[in-house]
Length: 298
Image (cartoon, rainbow, N blue to C red; front, side, top):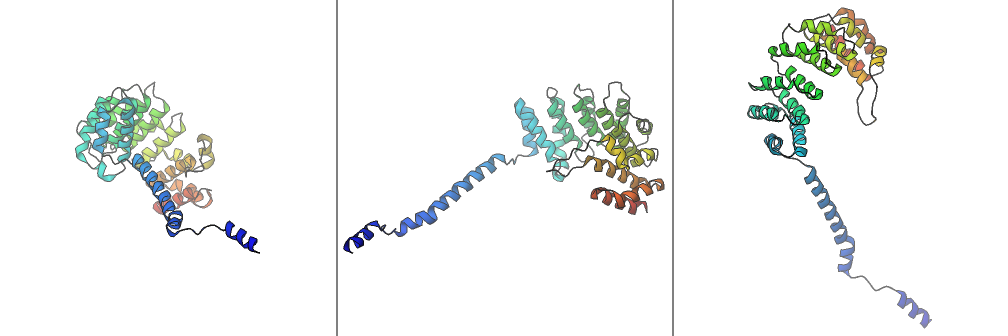
């Protein structure tokens, strides 16, 4: 019995002191949490970008080649902020940066978008500077410039853009953007070009022309709008490539554009198609847009 007691005593662990328990159960977990928080804050500080539009402009004008276009992109992204759009002091600097960026098409694309997103009226020399961009060899830059000119609200721009639709080297992307810009600009001098675009070989150019004419209160594009309200027809011309993590449906987008144009025109001949879509289309977005269009049509 004595040996058993001795053996039992020998196998027992010594009691753990209170400070050791504190280290084991409190201090070590707190240290782990502190390190985790420090790492998280460090990554956040690296990812966070609190630079102002003026900082980005300085980067665009003085930064290296691998830093200028990201700064131009961030500047164009900041234009979603109404306060940035309405800041009149930065407009001339953006125009100057655009004129100086002749060596980098990416920088010019994003700067053109940033200028076009300014609240009207644009700076006095902005339209002239953008007009020079129409001569760029890079087609993507020209498309951005055309969009910016269409957003300017200056009817004098029509005389520069309309001839670009019929240019022999105009690719479908250029024609599509020209038609869109002409539809966004005031005046009637562009109506002939828009009517011509209703016969364009590219379906999305025809759709843009019909919507643009509707914005000007013209019903010339009603037959094309009827096609836009026909899901089977749109599916023949639009590739349906929807990612699971994105709420995008290009076919529905085309049909919704047609529905909004139909509501703008309030054309009775479009009512049956709109009513059918409001009841039967498989897209909830299209059905909702159709219901809204019916309310406007009356």
